Structure formats: C-alpha cells, structure tokens
Image (cartoon, rainbow, N blue to C red):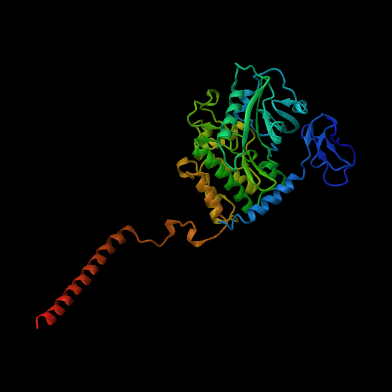
Length: 427
C-alpha cells in the first residue's frame, strides 16, 4: 500500500513497535504514532496507537475525579472461546484469508484501511465509508457463505448487529449498517478510539477505586438499557467493555445476547453460553440467563479491575464452568478490608449465588456505585442485628402504657372543662 511507513531500524523515542500478528519487534527512526504501518515479516497492516493506553488512562482519571463528588473498537483477540467459538470451529475446512489480506480492498461501500482486531468469530477493520465520508469500524465474517445457507455463526453474527442497532445508548457502541457483499457478512459501527478494559488493566494494573466505580457504573447503565429492551448480554467481561481517549465507556459485542421475543438459536439453547470465568452460577448450570446474570458477571468484572485478578481461576475452561456452577455467595470478610465499606457491600450484593438476592436492577447498581466512595452516615448500610431496637415482647408491653396515658390525659381535660363550666355557667 503506497504512502505507508514501514518499520525499520532504531526508534529513538519510546518503546519498540510490536506487530499484533506475529509479535515482531521494530525500532523506527521516524515517528509512527497515528500512521498505518506494515510488518515486514508477515505483512500485517495496522495503525500505531501505542499512546492510546496513556491517553485513556489520563482521560479516565480526569473523568472519574468528579464522579465520586457527584454522588476502540480497538478490540484485542477476545476470549470468545466460549460456546460460540466451539460451535463454529471445524464447520469449514478451508482456511479463511488472513485479516491483512483484506487491507486495501472494498466491502460494499467501505474501503478497508487497517486491522483493528481479530477474534474467534471475525475480523474488525478500520474502514472509510465512501458515501457518508466518515471512518467506521467494520466487523466481518472472514468466510463467505451462500445466501440460502446460514450456519450458526452467520445467525449469531447477524443477531449481534441487529441487537446492537436496536439499543441506542451513549454507553453502547452504535451500529450503523448491516450487509453482505459476495457472501461476506459485515456490519459497520462507530469507530471508537480507545482500548478494552481488559487491555487497560493488563497494561496499567488495577484501577483506583474511583476509576473502577466510574467504568462499572457506566457499563451498568448500558446493561440497564439493554435489559429494559428485553436483551440480556450473556457475555459481560473486561474485553467487552471499552474506554475511549475522552474517558467515555462503551459496552460492545452482543453476539451471545438473549433477546426477549425471539426464538433464539437452537445450538446455544440450554448451554452455558458466555466466557468461562465470567459466568453467573445459574448460567454455568445451563439454567438460562436473566438480567441478574449480567449483574453477577459485572460484579466479577468490578472485582477484577480492582484487584488485577479474576475471582474464578482454573487450569481449564471446563473447571472454570464447574467452579462457577458451584459458586457460593461472596461475603464482606472475603474482600480486602481496605476497600470502602459501601464498595464491599456493592460487590457482595452483585456476587450472591441466588439471583433473587442480587441487585434486581442494573440502574440501581449504577446509582449505588455513584455514592460508593462518598461516606455519609445517613446512607450507610446498617446491620439490623446490631442495632439498638426494642424486642417484639417489649413493643407489645409499651403499646398499652401509651394507650392508658393518652386516656388519662384526655379524661383530665374533660374534668377540668366540667369544673370550668360549672363555675362560669352555674353561677
């Protein structure tokens, strides 16, 4: 591709440039940030956005600073290794073209510029909409399919686009169009310049409490909008939450969503749909997902971004699913004592084994996170077993006393009135 910088020798400033595809490392003597570059070894083409991590961290810090006072589609290779990847794997014997082979080609009215990411279900490109003259993120299935043949992968891909397009919310990535060209299915969505929450924590470490509450509260608002529309996400995890360079939070990837009123996809019915390590107990047992299941997963995400580690860890995906299915409710004593008490209460309520004992509204979770770091005695959680409250027997004994006292006062007033009337009127 003409006019693109090619990584060469010494890079005098900053860290070396690493190819996302083959992990080759380069030192360049020319600035590459913001430029599209091509790997000399594997031919992969991407845009150098190495500074985005720092920009996102700075923006998130600034946005979260006032959050407590008020009360990228840069998709890494995701762990969609869950149900969907296993269903699609092996469905086609022919190997699809590599992501970089699409760079420079046109799909519908979109000119593909560079690779943003690739996962188990498809590729994500930076593209240019030639009609509306704007940059978009273009997600596509790498294989082509006949119009009269729609395997599970195509059906779930189309459902993801339709569900996301249905949900118009500032914390949900906007889908502009869905289409196909020569058997290749794709959809165009807003180009968010940022990184996933997973990448942010991996590169910067655990987030400060105010930043974690800020991100999860906005993700909860996105889920609240989805739940109101009858959509359960079913794959809430750090790699499906993004933060852009202005500090805005976006929830993405509704490919595994359960949509009220739709028959659903037979191949994933009654299966533990989602990513192992982020599943609610009832989902891991194959009992089906509900809004409270998304809240449990979001509680796991909150724990992970605060600590830098997963709560559910195991050597295999099967073991993680088993651990999730047998999970018991988290208690305050299991959480770091350094956390603010109200923040611990929020995590505990999210991570209850019984869905009925969790937050029943993602919006309520968002509201509680808003005040999680602002101590206020009137809003503190009170343990009723320790409160100085009268016992039931005492209440029964006190009520007659107050009744007799009231009658006595009333009787006294009647006697005084009678005496006054006799002296004034009787004479």
